[in-house]
Length: 152
Image (tube, rainbow, N blue to C red):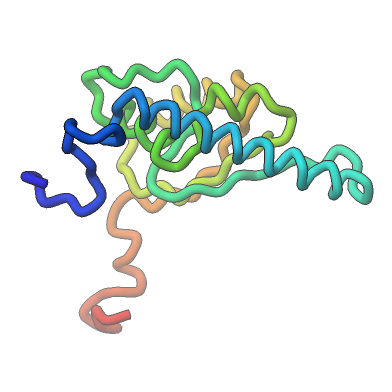
């Protein structure tokens, strides 16, 4: 595509292109299927571990918060919205189940403290507790630097 991004599908002559109605349906289906698979799994697990739930794991700056605005002027909020779709973890779908109660993400986006506080508060209020692993800035410097090298 003209932006040089390998995994963007912008050809609107096709049925499935980024953020098309067909892709919206597919993203919703994938999120619902994820919940269905976790529910089936927990039906088995809960025979041995009553009350078991799922801690879903993602990577890339995801927050499982519903009612995010895809047109928000803040790119971090737009990122959180669109990342849910790409990862098949649409918060509205996941929150309706009793399978997913926790969410862990390897956060690579430099959210501000205010954004972290607001998104975390909303996530908890909406029923999925975030357990984030931040990697905001220069974290790789502890392993990749002039002393220890840059190949890994």
